[in-house]
Length: 196
Image (cartoon, rainbow, N blue to C red; front, top):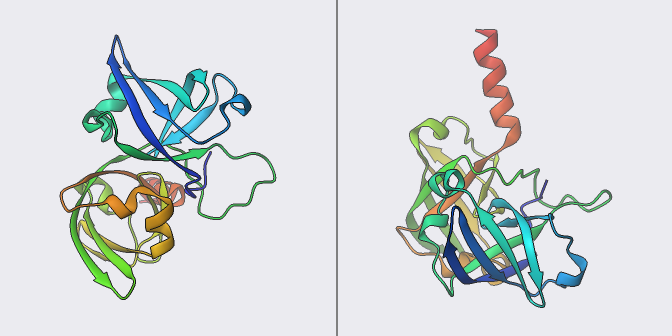
């Protein structure tokens, strides 16, 4: 489990296609304090550390995960949002994030509003019903609050601090973004299906 509060910006150092995709992620985390098998959220995707070295960790990514996320477009040198998994007693500064990406949204609009930036996304049709104004979403692993919803499109604001400590300062229209809907929204929708 994660909170969507990004704690490092990693860099994709290497990509190797085997049976699965192996990625080496450069990090400022103290990797001596990471156990093999630890979960690390990489751009919103919960991945398992399978090898560790000073300033890097490796993850294996299944074809299924590549097909459901933006990982297929990763390139060497790319910056990605990182978050280590929660420990009992950690502050829950964002919202509960599982790292299980539901689909890929497209960034379709950007506009400066004061010092902040308003970002507009188009969600996959099947996920749009789970996104509500003032609700939470995880976008590339970042916990963000939805401002408005119009059909399959929704908007969020990114403040300057968030742009500095995440990869949102690098965002561009057309970007494909890992989207995880709020767990509570998923269960409410499921209960409504059974209650009808």
